[in-house]
Image 1: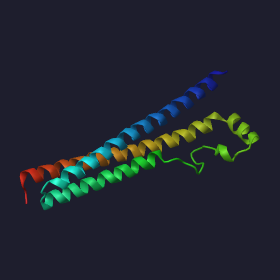
Image 2 (image 1 turned 90 degrees about the vertical axis):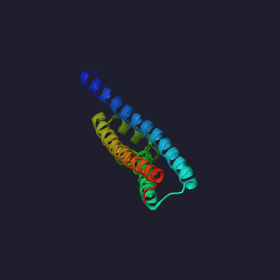
Image 3 (image 1 turned 180 degrees about the vertical axis):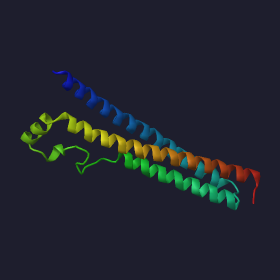
Image 4 (image 1 turned 30 degrees about the vertical axis):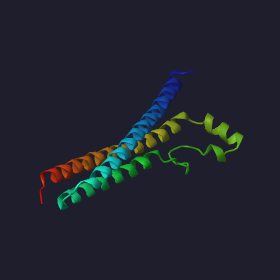
Length: 148
């Protein structure tokens, strides 16, 4: 195996590992968002809230739901075959052999584009979670402070 082949194989493994890390982070954030949504709903249901608290809390919950949507989009299976992924199930044995023996750099480029798209969704979701959490804290403060 040449040095170039080793480098391509290492790059391929690195990109696949990045995708796996992104999916793990996404799963953890989905669980966190779900817990925050459930907890917020439970707490808000039992508290007397004023209008500013309703508004801030409602917008905060909406941002958390939007973040959950982005997280789900990030881990949604891609069955269209884009991003350099051949649809193995639709290929014949000969086509699979040709695809596997083709240029590894093409697969790395496709996987890299997929990883960047996943990171972009993850970053946007984290931004929405932060904004939604801040608004939920504001709603709690408005409710506790009795602001009208």
